[in-house]
Image (cartoon, rainbow, N blue to C red; front, side):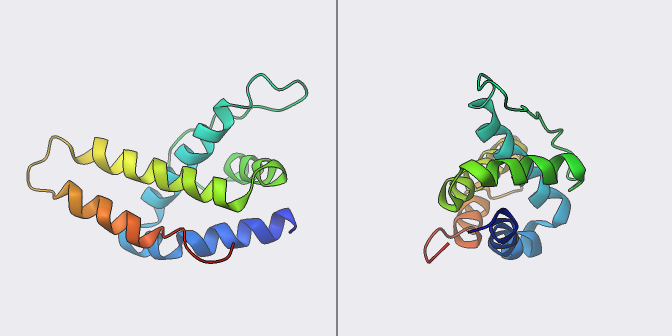
Length: 119
């Protein structure tokens, strides 16, 4: 599968999550997931390590980072890291706010970012 096809699949994967949490938060979760994956690539010779600002802006750096990771990583691995990042962000962003049901947020993320099916 080409890198551009993988990127399209990733955007489809994120679609329901974007509708629930908003575009900016969903892109922050994507960026955090990409940063998690990139940390393991820091020591690869000849690799451009890109540490993304988790600012919710799907710009050139985010696209290039995603494109680079799509060359080496399976969709399943990328999806798992996006999901891990979304759950981590939800927990840390809401842990001190008793008005927010963090468990429900995590359940929604698990629902939205379902890893079943074909990639």
